[in-house]
Length: 162
Image (cartoon, rainbow, N blue to C red):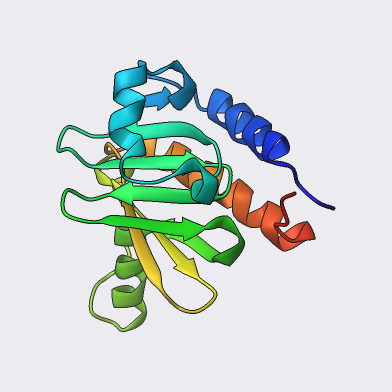
């Protein structure tokens, strides 16, 4: 099955709506003012990333944009991006580190405080790991859920866009 950019856009918007997005820190890119869009578009082009659908921001000039082909993030110093078709795994950075320490016997397993999470870790098939930053708590888990949906779409039928 070939997934069109319109299909991916609809799925992202649908999943976002399931998490009560947009909100104050997560916006539909198409609803931003033209000058605000232009500021972000200086960092990437939509030819490469696909149509930008959602923009996640935090209070520290960090942002993550979700397009129809890539996830793009700015951590205050550098720009990162990952193509959807190269995603192997999606996890919280702190959760992954916590479970690695627990498996090594360096810490005891306890409940993780989800409201303190703000960094999404995406692992590519080639082993590269990239962190994307959002506002703590529900914004991270909304992005995580959207990216898990994209990961599943990729695994089920391959992520081939027209």
